[in-house]
Length: 103
Length: 339
Image (cartoon, rainbow over all chains, first blue to last red; front, side, top):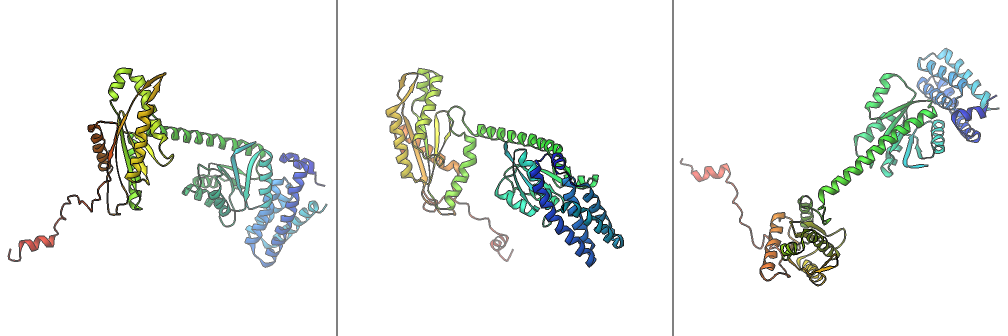
């Protein structure tokens, strides 16, 4: 379970301010994931890199370490065209994202 | 709250943008944000942002291009302190960023305390820039002003007059000058002393200015007690009216110095033109020289009076022109074919 109070404190924000930004994170994160999977499906590794990069950056900003690590792995794999393990890593990222995005 | 240094954020990631915005707003800054460099650039042209925080990788125009664009031209009203936000922390990338014109950089995800510290550095530099600018403006003002009377000095005259005359000639507009000189000023100085003389000069300029249009007409201390007034958009008859009004005011009101009423008078030489053709070229020396001639006429005829006429158009009374140099063909022809 995500400790919003602690995460907000780390960023020097009030809890409700953090939640507001977190909601934006969920919204854009869903778009990033959608883009990521359609890019993988089409074999468009450049677009996959972009989607993972965007999610990685957003997660890093909010201090969401698990999502950051998972997105980083996806970005690296897409960059190196490791399509076999890419799908697996993308699924892991999706699970990490959903575990906190859908409480 | 610090609203003297508004900050512009250029960041494409909505979450990062929002977080930066919130953090800076909370710290009391005046913040605006856009999602790419292109937007940032057009916003900066509308409103000045002394501090720009820009992401590196953005669609349309990235951070490096934005840095170069801001540095490359006079888009902003003053110095823009640029902080580049980057996830890249390799030396090469940082060097590329600084070479593109960034003043500083911050690695993402940013640390709040570090961000604030770097903004403080930026504001320190900007304060310095502002005080330098202010000092430069003060120096500029001093360099063109006569300290005693507050009128312009001759340096400024030779800088501004040619532009003023050129503009009037180009658009066929009138322009006149009044050259004024306090009568028997040497006697005033001898009788009352130089301190009183100085105060009289001040009062004299004040009287002149009372009869002028603010921000249009301007006064130059041309010599010791000689002042030149430039009247754009005014023909000689207009200048005569103004000079006459000045003359009356000065000789009826005189100057009061330390409770002593000192009566003074002044003579005026005026000249100018209404609308000469574009091909005309009137030098500053010739127009002021003409006013000077009329001023001495006023002195000769008993002082405390206004004398002067419009400048004669060169096409009406042509100046002696040198004939054009003969061309080589002309020379050959002159020699004749037989030679």
